[in-house]
Length: 210
Ligand SMILES: [Cu+2]
Image (cartoon, rainbow, N blue to C red; front, side, top):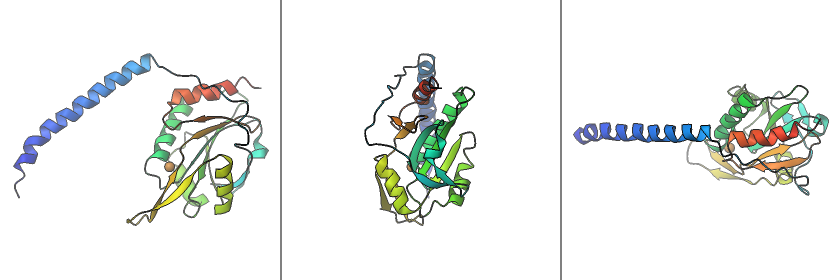
């Protein structure tokens, strides 16, 4: 096999990649010094969206949102086999928790609700979330109809997509990040692409509430 063309092309490609990285790094350094963050305008009334629910957490304990008044919640729906949307959101949330200065007396907890309860048992969620220990996070699972009900409350859509591989299937899912206040009220929906600073700016507004 003659792989001469590859060896000739490769260094050029490598340089091109390095150059692209350098340009991106310079641009992002520039962005960091002058962040353009739009402060999220929290809504007082989301109508019928949101609300309380009871599911099972990744320790196998029952979790009831109504019992947690006083805590602030970030809620994300996903599944542990997710190749993209979930890991990127969780990495972003690591950044949020790293930078967020939570005043004493406040709790900001992330809820990661599986849309794949058949595979995401409490044990599986526990394993998966052990990679994200810097986030104050609870993985939640339940029976399929329980998950369906919560997903409907938050207008989350999800859909099984069969795969040819051993994984069997993926689950397409909505990627909103929900902000729920100390009274259990849904106050904002972040888009998946919203930067960590914007999520922080949303959460910080709720620190004004005693
Ligand atoms: Cu996902």
